[in-house]
Length: 148
Image 1 (cartoon, helix red, strand yellow):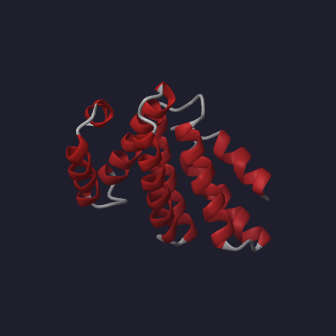
Image 2 (spheres, one colour):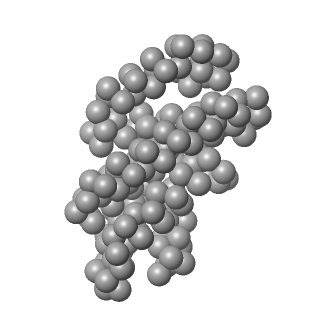
């Protein structure tokens, strides 16, 4: 089941995001898999792709945000969004700590962009984005400016 979900997430594009969310919902119903297991897998894979994957770009950040929102709707669970944002915040903190490396800066850019897209589609409140901006103003390093 994990391989099937990973395979679906690896094929995600702007055009396929709705179908993939539907297929993942079908996997959960067909195999009667616990939603928590699928939520953990989805959040982990999408965050990993945003941080490490070769497809980490502004377009992929937007698709990732829409995918998370669509999966939350398909699974009937806002926990997907909450879990994703919690993991996103954790990875943003890690990227801020690793701001000296090029990969850390790219990861930071992609993660913040994903958060902004989540706010723009109504998945999270803009107060979350402003909270991040207030956090960044405290240190105001080069990586923080890059985020803004």
